[in-house]
Image 1 (cartoon, rainbow, N blue to C red):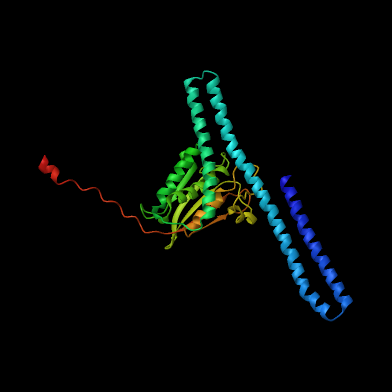
Image 2 (image 1 turned 135 degrees about the vertical axis):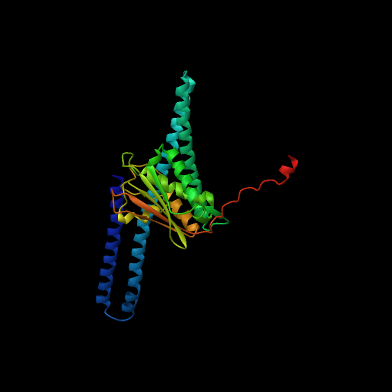
Length: 319
């Protein structure tokens, strides 16, 4: 209902703009026919394109504002839900523990659930804060040589724990020797980008999907960059939305009612990848076919293996 209402409003502004352009054209032609020649004819010919351009631009801006306002409203509703739900859950379990005796085993279960809700709450707050930082800072400052393979493995482990996945739910394939898959950048930002890709893949894949539910592949397809692919068996993405899903607050219309979220995850991924000189894009054959997110990051220098600490030559003399 909300989507159809938005489309009706957008269509209304488009039709109104087209009618105004047609009306302006009719008046201009009539004016030329009546005046016939002279200065008025020249003024009409010069002013008519400006009037039409103004009407078209006004219609475009109105349609954009409608979409932007509705995205902001959807974001506020989503964030409210993401913040309120874990707080309400934590409060419920605390009231239960306070109001009556609870068996030790049940207490441990309550504590586990409250910790999970706290992690969910903290994750939402971090997403919002990180979005604000990325929005105000376009350039990455400083950095270090990072082992991208190790960073991806860490993110896979965190996703498995967060969503309670079996070890075989996420399949990893790294075509790189230890210490070879390196990039230069900020570890916290890149970790957040990879985690958001994995969260997105897990959330949009049904728990009943065949294993592995998510496939992660890291390879060096050319000498200049490392390519990370995160492939899921989820709902898929329409071709018209493959670029739009990386916009701030944007959520695919067909998925918004099925999966909770704030519309910030993929925006953070795109912002971080761009700040590190890379690019990210999505591939999908359409709804119901799953999707693949591809990240390309400039390759860094290989990390040399650390030598084993040398034995102290004085130990023998002391002995």
